[in-house]
Image (cartoon, rainbow over all chains, first blue to last red):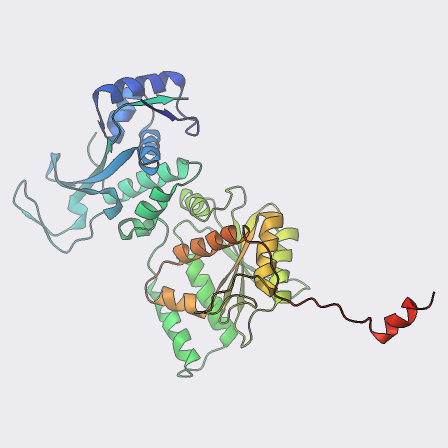
Length: 122
Length: 256
């Protein structure tokens, strides 16, 4: 089991780390709002944790791209390093519409823990 | 929670990176240095691109410019391109001028400091422009070191020369040097002593920036180079040979 010390992220309490361990035990795919909801931290803090894991190569990061007309399903999942889309024209595979305006695009993050067993501690 | 628009997404990423006490290699290379997230630290500036073009035209004697002002303008625009920049001021004292003092306190500026290996307690960068034919002398280099140490002791950890020429003692392209001399030695010693950095952005670097390279990436590479150089043994290539005392001193030597 890989132990990960979160002491440098000083906004996580012992209680929150315990809740985080419970979450990661059953879910390796983490989104910022899921971590925030499960641990009671703020969205920014959840994102900081996920970027911390990404930076330490404990998680792979992805950026999910949504069409504003149907925000329940993303239509594109790309590696985090590719950043936000800059497009002239794009085809949405969900509604089969052409997207011509970048303002019609929305984003979220997904991080996948790439180690078998991870235990967080402070 | 619904997905966020581009601005909110960038802000979330920015705040997350700022919350990290130090940035590892993956966050640096795969996020901050990637094309996809390039606008987290810097913004595009058509004016800078135009003035860089003017500079290279001036170098080739295709146009008239005030050389000093042209380089100062480019320096201003280079730092103005940083997303989080706050104030860019110019100071002059009894001593010769130091051209620009740049600072900021936004999340983007703190992230830049973190990216540049600088402590966030000192958020000021001191910039001096030199559009001269000869390389930056050790005296000029030492002067900026002195300003950083004495005037901005707690508030600045980076001094930047924007110069047409490199500084003395810096290796020329194609030549490998393992020894340190002149300004290069001053740079390494100053860093070892104070933990502050003085770097030179010269004509070649401006050429790279003009060709699309990121200014922040060039600064970071130069800072990293100084960090690495402090591990080199300071083998000065000034040849110290013992010589006879000059006559005006020699006469005292044998006086007893």
